[in-house]
Every structure is written in structure tokens, then in C-alpha cells.
Image (cartoon, rainbow, N blue to C red):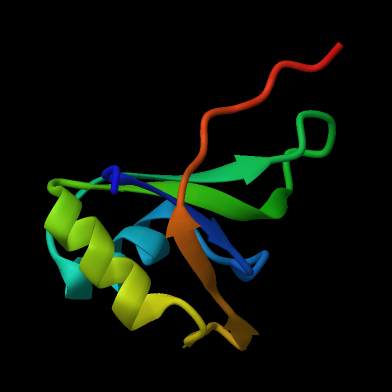
Length: 86
């Protein structure tokens, strides 16, 4: 398993610091990014978290997937490489 995780179901009012703090329960967070709409600048409700080790990433998936965060249910799994669009 890789260290980079996809996180869906992020509350639209959450910040990257909130996300980093929430995932710190599973280990050391290297980076946390919330994807925003390029026109409005508002959160799109998903993002990516990179943990410092594969074991911590696995623990984050096991302990945080399906849990509630800010009133929404998180979907946490291994990030897949972005597919090229035609």
C-alpha cells in the first residue's frame, strides 16, 4: 500500500489543518490537501493525505474509513494515479 490516501466526504467548511489534525490519530501526516473548484475556490469535498509510512497509511484506512468528520462520513482509501483525459 502506498503512503498517499484519497479522502472523500470532507465537510465543505473544513481546512487542510483540520484534515491534518484528524489524520494525526493514525500517525505522522506529511501533507494534507483539499481539492478546490478552480473557478469558485470552494472545497469540492475531497482531498489527499500523505502519511509518513505505509503502515500509518494502512492504519488510517482501517481506523478512519467510514467514520464521521464534521457531520459527513469519510471515505478513505489508497490514492490511485490520475488517469489521463482525452
